[in-house]
Length: 208
Image: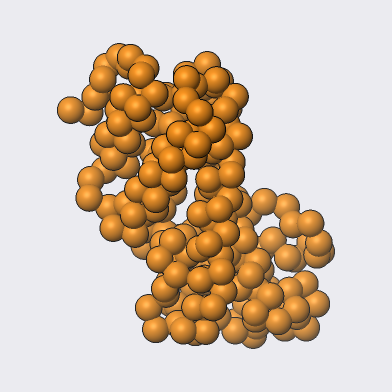
């Protein structure tokens, strides 16, 4: 099983051990589930005292919030990076963003848990995940609205909002239950977006 941590971004607060503690917690959750995460176990994995873990993180609830916030940041970061790579081609930016998100979510237990607001039998996480799922949807739509407008599409603001809502909800449905490879799914959504936007793309379906 692929771990979820990747490169943990620098935290706004905390000392030198905060980053490895969050990384260890994410990896342990991926391998053994949230119930297996304890401050003592994290201290052992990171090579620090249990008191250091408490000093850096606080409570287990705070740890869960830090882990989920990290995954949300990664989700939005890959979307933003895709648009940065294609400042003059909206359809290509959307293809790149969708593919990057789906590749990030592949076998990523925590990100899928956020998208579905479930995490198996780990009911302790459910209230937090439910809140964060709403934040994920809102954050993604807000970011995309700002990004898409910068390309000056021939659509009204209301029409842009509809397109974004459809794309985001479709992507999240594929995060929860993929029906094809990330590349093919991204290709299909980019084609649909191009048709709505009235933009010609070449090739029209690169993975047909």
